[in-house]
Length: 391
Image (cartoon, rainbow, N blue to C red; front, side):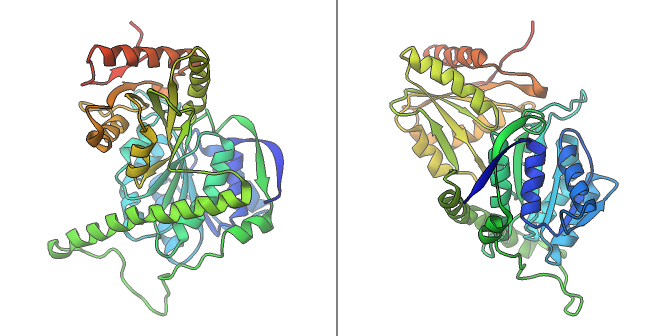
């Protein structure tokens, strides 16, 4: 794939990806820090750069409700939101996945109220992790651009037909200008087939969708939905493989950095992974066997790939950027459940940090890793610890 290198804000890169995907409909409501995405798309439609219906609505709940309608009649549909907006959509998210509507949504992840925060963490995504959507994390603007294009092909595959979220860290990705490679329109057209929903609504053949499901059918409906979402991983891997062949930019459900022979691994999600790489480089240069695991595919969860990625490590340190109030940290708890068969050989230590946009520097990652090693030596593995809390 021939590409051109440009400097572009992460939000604009996502808007460019939606334009190149030739979306038919955008229904959106502005909310910090994702507003630049839908503002740019509105500008594209107004200027004739994008031939699409742009639907301004009064809330995020209405935005997702409008997306249900446009997707159900066979329109390639895109939206974006963040934080409280994602939570206002909450009940409609389940409808989209249950009706198998391949909506693509970019989420600029943001801390949830209260207190009011517009800065990034993973509170919003963790509050919607069980809504039945395919969910993928990007670490930089290039990945956000690539993964939005891939998301349409994944979601619209007839054997998948699930809505898909692409998660970017609010402000860290949405508002930062980075160099990236853009694709040409004909190249995206060749990679992304024209969308034809096999069960699109037709006024000449009226049907009911999402009708009342009594107890004798509800369990089977949910079982079928779960099986289909888990099976979508095969298509996700195939789409990423084909995209990699075109661009030489390869994506995997779980990605590693300098994990060969590593005895201690750090696991992160999102843009903080790139900061963590600086700490990994420094610690390895000092002779420490430290590596990094990055979880890209959040749903469907990559059980097998994660177990393979931890390899022969003796300690896994997990950084969550969200709290589960009164319970274990959400990502770490899923990691612990997944890797339970590897115990007691593998120890797991959980930390929570970076809430509400608070930075975690490379030096802080280095200290976190060392603290995790010390905790493991002292057998303090049972509860997570919050880092960076001022006394």
